[in-house]
Every structure is written in structure tokens, then in C-alpha cells.
Length: 338
Image (tube, rainbow, N blue to C red; front, side, top):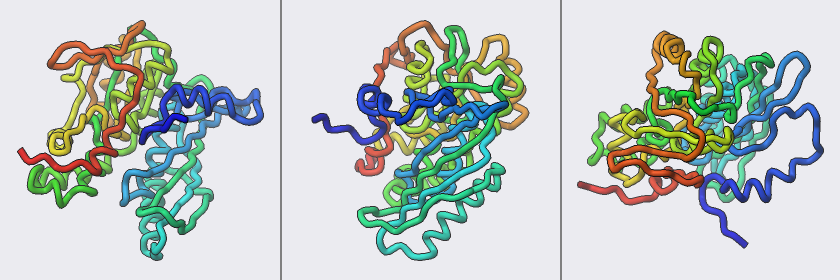
């Protein structure tokens, strides 16, 4: 029997083991489990309900805050407004009341910021964990004509990326490996990277772009980073992409952290980055929207008929379909002192 790698379950295993087993079929399910499609779509009459579920497993602090935002992001990239959330909070043996309060305070703060109601869930102390694990399920709604999927990208669409690649992973690593990185990366850079978690939400820009532009597809690249997100978008859209590394923004702080841990920032978990495939004629409108929100953005490439091409300093490389997450290695890899 095949041993599964750490990180996202490979696409071929999902298609063989998971996707055929979805319980009772319902005609109300407009979009169910599929590669790259991180939120389900359910017909609720005059609107669609959008439902996403995501855990926070790599971070040991601010997990309540992260859980709200990563689940809200998956709903927002459908063009839907996040509304209701359930949380499952699993605490390690020996956890005290203060730890639970910290998790819930973070979730409450993020939910209030987004206008989301936390409507239920589950809390328990469980053995075999060394830090809290929080799983969320977010529900939102969208007008039927404004629904966006990951799989809607068409050849010729330009790919817009907001903020900077690897921002979530850099924030996690700045917290988790601070003592080992501080002499290499520098205290000021690490302190700035810690605050990258404040950029975790894509809800504002996703909803605003969908309101003003012809957005054909949106995706929130989490595990696997920007490259993983592009691969998922391409698989879902049955298309390809051609992007240039020089056009993908990476902060100096993230670059330094990744160099010290010998990982690729473009494959580092990247919640907070929005990937949007937009009609070429609407890019000026998209620029106006994002500039108006004060959100940094770049055109990183375009959707193509086929092939997943990344153009870097060494030339053009076609990447495969494997989604590789660098965070797990970065959490345990020795720091390189140059």
C-alpha cells in the first residue's frame, strides 16, 4: 500500500480514493469535491450557498485567527461573502484555560473583522498533539450570476497576484524558528515577517474584483504556495499557464528566511495571496480596484491552452502536477549560515 507524503494528498489518490465516495448524491450540489475547488456550491433557491473546510496544523500560535481567515478566503474566492463559521478546537494534553482563551479570542477578533458569526463547533483536550489544531467550516452566500470558481480560467486571461508569495509561511517560520533565525535574518526583518499574518485575508480584494471586473477564476494558494495554486487552477480549468518568476512578488524578509532554511518561497504556504484570472480588457479596472484598496498586485503571467511553464533566470521550465509544500521541511531543517 502506498505511503502518502506529508502535505496535501496527491491528486491521483484523491481521484481514486476520495472523490468517488461522496455519500448520497444531491441535485442541489452545483460543485462538489474537485482538485483546486476548495469550497462547495449548493443551490439554496435564489442564491448559492458556498461551504469550505480547512484546518490549521502548521502554526502553534494565532491558530484561531488563522482558522477564520483561511476558511473565509476559500469562500470569498467564490465571490461569496463569508457569513457563518463552526470551529473544532483540539488542544494538547496539559493545555490550560488560558490557551483555549487565546485561541477563541483570536477567532473572535478575525470573525468580527469580517462580519462572520461563529455559530458552533466542538472543543476538547486530546492526547498525541504537541500544539493546538483548529478546523473550521465557513458558510457564505453569493448571487447566482456572481459565482466564481477555480475552474473558470480561459486561455488568454491574465493572471493577477496580490501581495507577496509565501507570506503566511514566512510569518509562521518567523515565529516558530525565531531564536535560530535571528542572527542570520536579523531581528527587524523577523519582526516584520511576524506581522505578515495581518495580511492573511483576501476577502476584500476578492469581493471587490468580482463586483467590478470580469473575473473568470480565483484561487487562494495555501499549501504548495503560488506554484501549487497555479497548478490547481490549471487542473481545475483544464488549461495551462505561463508565468515569469521575476513578476511574482516576494518580500525581502521572506527571501531571507527561505534562503536561511533552503526552501523555495514560491512553494511556501501563501494564504493572503489572491490569484485571479481576469479578462485582458479588464486589467485596468482591476488595477483601479486594487490600488483603491491599497492592495499590492502584479500581473504574473497568463492562462494558456496547455503546459505549466515557469520562466526563471535559468530559462523556461515546465512543472508537473505535484504540489509540494516547503513549510514542513522548513520547520525542521537546520539554518544555513552563510
